[in-house]
Length: 294
Image 1 (tube, rainbow, N blue to C red):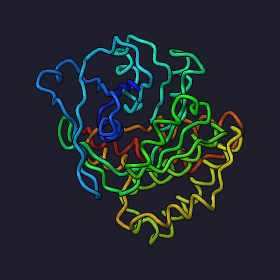
Image 2: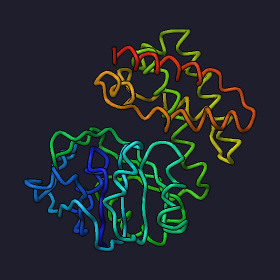
Image 3: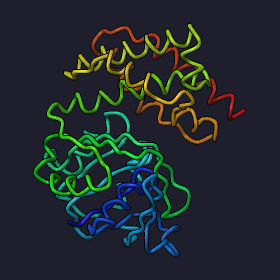
């Protein structure tokens, strides 16, 4: 199959390198200024050993592909899509939040977009060079993508991808947001890692409250999210765990604050659900952003 990747950061690079190493035809879409000298192969360091694979690079996608993997930051989505000038058979977004799905369906058509979520700790260390920290990659895809993606996901099993198709699309999207969102907001507002949050009665209560708010909004959207399961997953995370948003703030990078908190806040307003803790955390983070700019 022919694949293209837009957003060749940690996640896009991991997907692209993994697919190319399995013999798939992969093209990565990079910024025009980065195209000269971009590596002709991709490398991914994994706990099981490094893999190296050939891939093409382009600044503009004009040739149709079977699968377009979208792994930009949410605030980079529109810019990334400007480089896509062909219609994929299937577009697979791996972005945070939920709002991007309708944006992509408006562009490509409803049936061509198969939302997905990925759980992995990875990073980009240089153009075309990536590190995978966990031995297992967890990939969940909406069941609508099964006719297009079943075969290629089966191939990814050889690289320790654990994947499944999820029938309820809202459950797929909101399950990740209910886990990611509250922890990202609390860790960024507090500046604390997981063990420090859990050791503080105040911050642990804020995390529990924000999680309950997110799950209530998720239920109003038709998602089936179990707060107890969210709590169990958080309990299993490393004590030193920090959120990407927290790291982005420390590095003075742009935050995905609206993508992560926006659906919860707007959903609360729409459905009459109390999301005051989420609103409070967003305000605290915005104050931190302003302080960093001064």
